[in-house]
Length: 363
Figure 1 (cartoon, helix red, strand yellow):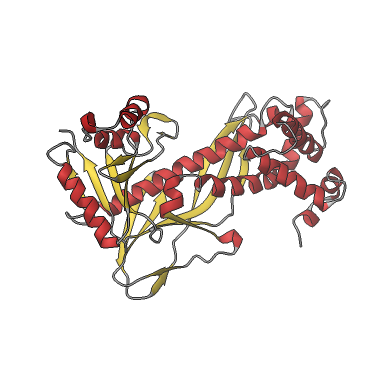
Figure 2 (cartoon, rainbow, N blue to C red; figure 1 turned 60 degrees about the vertical axis):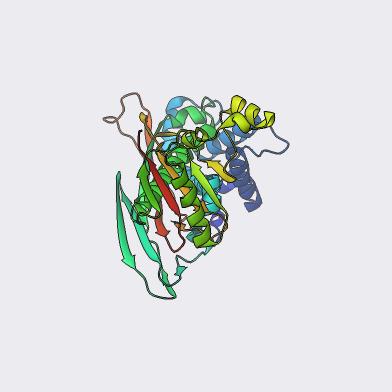
């Protein structure tokens, strides 16, 4: 049975008892959240979304705040059902916009009938990362030839503080609400993946893991590490890191021999695209949630990664996002709401391919 058929008569009437109208509304919300509207402005799209939500709770543009508040209370489960569809889609598409994700992370969405199953060649080492709150624990185990494994998933949640009634009175933007939710999850998942890879990198052994300053006296060591990863994997390698980490690599380049174009590139962007013929890939930096004193990605870590190999990081997303409201008179006296948004996912790292990691120490 389709989801539309499970709605009550009031909701079906809002969509003129036509499932295609319901599908079009979902598409409008998705297009709006992705900034991919066609033939309609963002303002018109938001107005249409608000109009539908008002109809679902039995209100219109003339309804008072008290009427809207009561309508939200009576119909919040239905409202959240509609929003969850958008969040599920935005989470998946948002994570895959990151170049690190595209190259080194394999995403499986169980809602799309993917199997939570990964094949592991012989002599591989699996590190499964289970995240609980702000604690990251790595569980290591040896695997035999030709085995498969599943990544354990857990629930992760965030709270979004918002005034939902302002959305339904046209004062809040729907895209902004969904954007805040997906941005928070995107930040958390990126942090979990980088920390998982760093945790594995420190166990690779001295040939592949370096902890030292990066300067003229150690640049030959970096060159050798890149060469070793390339030979071990028979692949091109790239050096990945944040701008802060890559700046240490930029400083290794003597620009006296460089062409005018290269000097201009360094002058205008502060960057070189290559070092010793090795491509440099910048990882997007950001702040941790609600803490501008903590960075999302370590600024003192470089990853020397082979290109074109089987993605070594596995992200399993069950596609079962749930959203609910926490509000009572004793929680927020200003009648605002906390939205609890939870999704189920898990992260695993397979290190059957060699890669390098450099922990940069101060000189």
